[in-house]
Image (tube, rainbow, N blue to C red):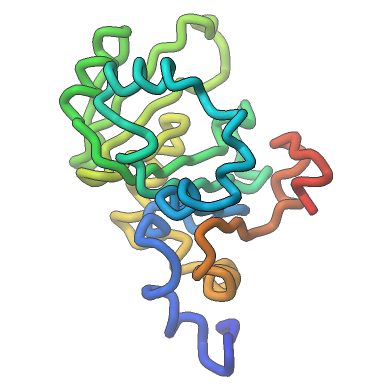
Length: 214
């Protein structure tokens, strides 16, 4: 039966709860996290981590190459981790990042091609497949990719994770249909940064410290 929230089925709230990016998160994700970058950047919380940020020189170089000013152009970041039983051969393959920003898709694609990437289409979406020269040809680790799922939204992760994100949206088989997870999102969605889910389901494979699990 449906879980309830304040006496009503969670399904009543599902479509309105959380950011639109959740429609690109597979339904079986164990953990989902979200940050409204605009709000976080202007918060006292961000000031505590200023020392960990790249130097202005590195930021300028990144903007020159990609056309993206992280401080001004990135609006939000959503992250998901698949459960350990669904993880691939390497923990990194279980992560999915969705970043909403003002992109210059052509510029990013050209930059990737210059560095040996390959571009392909999947269900009408452009995917850039990064070639990792450090990975041996016969290694089991899957190649990383990013896909332009919307004009201002990029999905980043392993190729299978990016494809799963596209499929989740196209087939409405996403986290929005997971009532248990959406109940948690309903409870905290007004925060500018949050994370919900079953951290125990990913801890052993993702190598999360005990403090972060807590």
